[in-house]
Length: 403
Image (cartoon, rainbow, N blue to C red; front, side, top):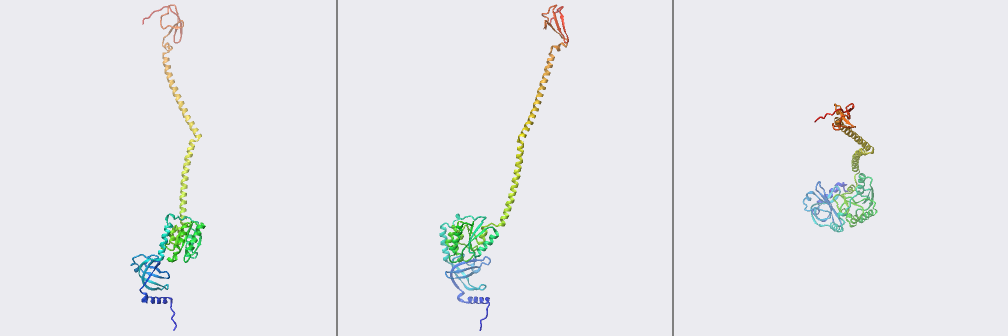
């Protein structure tokens, strides 16, 4: 009798039932290292891989079991796990659903990573003082990654949107697998030797610890540290962390984020430039207005101190002085005229001629006045001066008058 034709769903459901129905698989204990650990914040479930040196198996720790854990699961941590074997029907992937998880010491990869980290830290590879700033407006960006990976496509898409004028130089390399670390290191050193770019992005998309391990290799870390170009490390997703990240000048959580971190947004720059242009215009307007006021003030001062104006002012001042001098002269002459008039009046009042007009006369003998009768004898010829006549007389008699 021919076997019935099953759908994929029917097959997976049957295999799941077989696995979960096997008593030997319902309480399995495993020892292995955690790889690719992810905890989803929405439901609290944890998904990861348990691995040893030869194999690996997918593991699920649902929220109810995860809440009972007394430690925080980490990459590379060796654990003891208890659970039941099942099948994830949608993918046809068998997995172990864990009921309990306990730490079993540090895994080999984790220990190797810690040892290398301590060695490189002692050499100053991770020192903060050797970190360089990333240029704000790069003209050329070098990228060390796989030419077929999603990372280069994400980087190019972000750059074309944010800063399309930038030139991208790809230094292709394998990013996982045997020899990937050496290829990455050589690509970084080539970009450094070419010295054509302003900044270097090195990285890849997300993956397991094993997928990202090439970026923990010593040759890669030292190449990044020795690079003459500022380096942005963008390895994996937000939660992934490698030694390459620690050695780089800047760590980006993803390749897309690296493209954003090393370039400005052209739209933001347009807005910023419009603001600068407006402020510059306002500043220029204010400056030229102020300078125009200063020029007008200087022109007024120049007019004030111009020789023609100075001469005109001097002439005006001379006219004023001339007027003052004339006024002063007139005043002085008037005062002197008044004094002369007063003196003339007084002289006139004292003048002998004025006295003669009042009926007096002046007697003279031999051309000399005779104020009294002494020296005049009868028969002498004398002159009598009156106000309007001169008399020649002869003395007939003299009568003395006692006073």
